[in-house]
Length: 379
Image: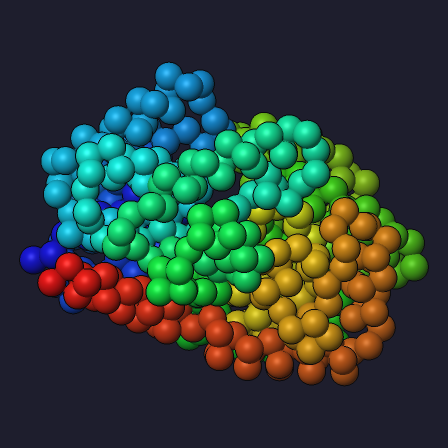
């Protein structure tokens, strides 16, 4: 039995973004171990047949001592588990796992999933430039494994990190996001008889464009007061850039948005809406919410931001606008409100695009093929 060891920052992210891959691996005879920080899902994952190990990942950033401790924990786990394949997901697990593998000189097949490089590789501030230099050194070491595949979600991140780490073509692959279950996120025709609803669903961080969404809603509602803007998600209390609940309460009182909080019925939320909006300037891979919106056959308004622009075909399945530009965002939303047939056609094309690019079954199969190909390179 081959041992597949996942390193991921937190359990809920694993469940929302990588669970189907682990389930398929389990079915194909792998022993699957999930190493992450646990919140409330440890028993749930164990009940599915996975082995679980706690790792002290700090999502909001800890001190140097804390971060070194986490690398040591990963090193100890690698030495104890002796995995046949290691799959690390998101920035910190990828870097720390790569460093730990290097420290123990383990020639273990390494899958590094890059789901967004973050702002440091695109921002022009002095702090970002200094951080970029430091991060580049860490990436060069972490991705220096002989047997590896680096999974990118968008072409911008692929180009940047290929240049930084001199990746060979054989050592990388592009998989656009974590996919969507097309039988769950299915297409249902819009209710064109209702006043249009515009929905934004995400972790409520400033970088996700929440403030721009609110300002665009103000602009649109000045002309079309009956348009309903829906905000879905919760503040991320571990992140210093979270939107605060008091701010949300004020927007609701002002009549700008209806706040739905956390929802487990996103397919129904999208199906009852007309436009899905994500004005993000976050370091995205390919936002899962945009994949799900496309699968539901809804026109998308997002930003010309790496990852976001990869989730749409401009002018065909959605519209992109400059980051941090509330006025342009309002114009794009208005354009889709005023042109029902254009919007409906975009939704139909979005569903076709999802079927071609975002089927979770295809995403899962590609990952299992990666594991097999890496193991073959050892044998």
